[in-house]
Length: 214
Image (tube, rainbow, N blue to C red; front, side):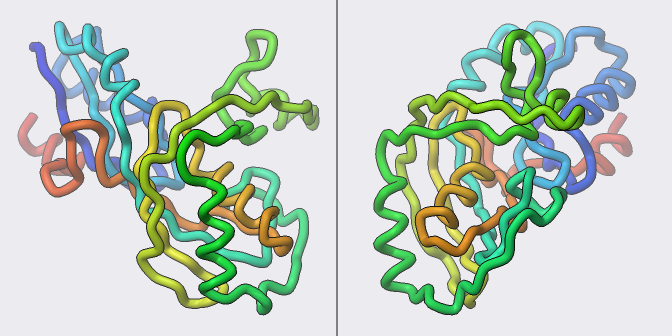
């Protein structure tokens, strides 16, 4: 079999586990996904199989759209809700105008460092392996592209934003850096990938539907 499944990955599953499930369901050895989604995140995960795996690298470069819920006042070691709380601050001084002003610093090409709990590598080892061993290193920043950044909802201390970005952008790092910029800390509470290139969440299929079809 050759092609691409537009999977709506549920919260709680790793991207690798989705690939393993597809491999088992269709009996195809060559299966890969186009851009990791964290277990705590949901949404569009293109899974290529057979000859379709030849375009994985092109899909990895595709523009991606996310809806992110960020909570101010808390900082975690993983930059999301799965991590340990490292710091608590009072976010009551943040108003919408101050938030909008802070967000302008994250538009266009920005410099961003990956979280310690990520698959980015240091001397050949994934950062998350070092983090789990209690080893924290200084991460180099790298340029990423933020094409669009809009506030969708604002109910302090929670803000929901929609982000259209380029390859290699960590929304967890964006949340963390925004909190640091506002001086109260923040973490990514919820993340949904709405699109990856031409693949949109309205057209994505659940794993239950895929299993039924198989």
